[in-house]
Amino acid sequence: MELKRLTYFLAVAEELHFGRAAARLDMAQPPLSRQIAALETELGVLLFDRSRSQIRLTQAGEVFRDHARHILERLDTACRDTRAIGLGGAGRLRIAFVGSASHGLLPTLIKSFRSHYPEVELALSAMNNAELHRALVSREIDVAVARPALQDDEFRSELLCREKLILALPDNSPLAGQSRITFADLADQTFVLYPRRPRPSYADVVLGICQREGFTPAKLELTQDFQSAISLVSVGVGLSVVPESVARTQRPGVVYRPYEGDNPGTALTIHARLDNRAPQVVNFLEITRKFARSTLTPPAASDRP
Image (cartoon, rainbow, N blue to C red; front, side):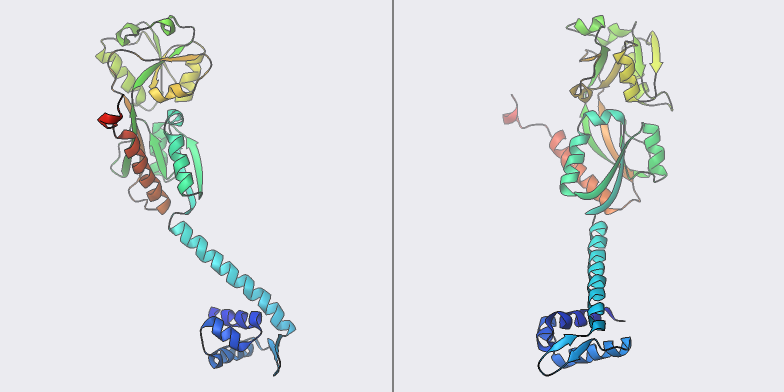
């Protein structure tokens, strides 16, 4: 059965007048009458009682009218949903991120994406860099938010932000009360770093700072992720070196302090597979680029204090 015949039938069923139905369909009346007659022949039933004064649906016609409406409504919905997903306005996007990213610009970026594409379902999860790399390679996620950047020729990347490093200290540490902390003076401290494995990782970035400042930490406590590291700092196990944005979220038992000395900073980078051209991914990267331009561009001289 041709779908166009359902459209023709429904127009006549709603207008109950072949002339008005033909005008609504922008066609001549005789071809419309032939299409309805062909439909009745195909079904083997009369759909309309015809008389000179009026046209009425038969019982069979009333049943077919309800089904025809449902079929055409379902088809219209299917077309709309398919177009929306195909253009990235709906569907699903799986984003995984390092724990420290949740304290910086990432939540604002995700809110921005939601405001542009409210019908896209976001599946969010926290992973360390090694897990991000594995999950992106195996297509378990669509987007990875990493620190430091993932190194893989199969990935495309967008820089989200750069920021300084600061110290996370137990609130009862003598260092917390000092007005000036020099990194070289931390040689006798316990450093709580992450992740434990695999290496090299963010932990090695911090160990590189120690090396350039002329010491090896007196004691090293390695944990698997950022949240675990901050938890150990909060109970007094040692100090950690974290992105500056982490200080925006206060944690009981932890204080944040800047330090003097080598500070290479850290960057948050958005990654996706080169061969993943899903419109949801493309749209997220485009939002990231616009967002990053607004945060990475230095203020004009007239805007500076």
